[in-house]
Length: 194
Image 1: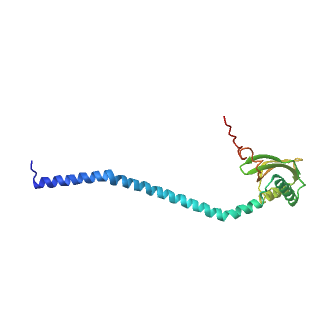
Image 2: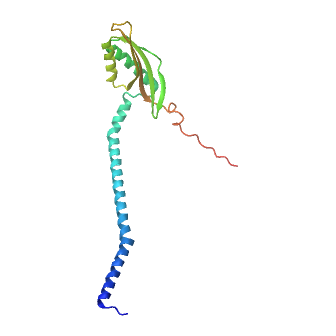
Image 3: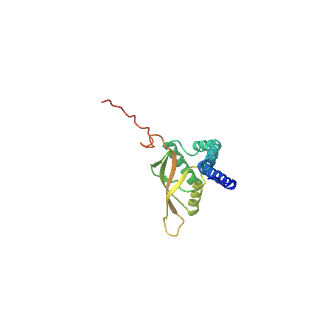
């Protein structure tokens, strides 16, 4: 069977088209898919790199600030934190012209990672303006404090003679023994030979 010139031309064009389709779907298509996947991975890696660079820059910029804050009001142990709180509560009451507060023994309770919380219970008497002044001084202080419970009662109905009872918490850096068993180093494993 002899093909005419026109039929040969059609057969060659068809064979080239089929060949191009096979090459596209077998080689070029997967390469283009792979390229788009790699482009997406490069974008993700660039975003991660930008984030890491921001963290490094923030660390360089904020490291001294954190060190200053840790050296400042946040104390390194429980006794320093307790004496800071006792001194501060006395100053706040004195500045507000309240009676000297009575303070119960602190409760050294909760621990969270590197910090421990200490709670003091204090009681003092004064007028409404004195108590407001005391709370304002506490709120604007650089000492890390938090009022967890507050009770305000009157001595006699219709007078401005009030008793304030507070539970005040502060934080300090917990030592390794205060961090608990989870923070302590794991015990070495002894190997036994049979």
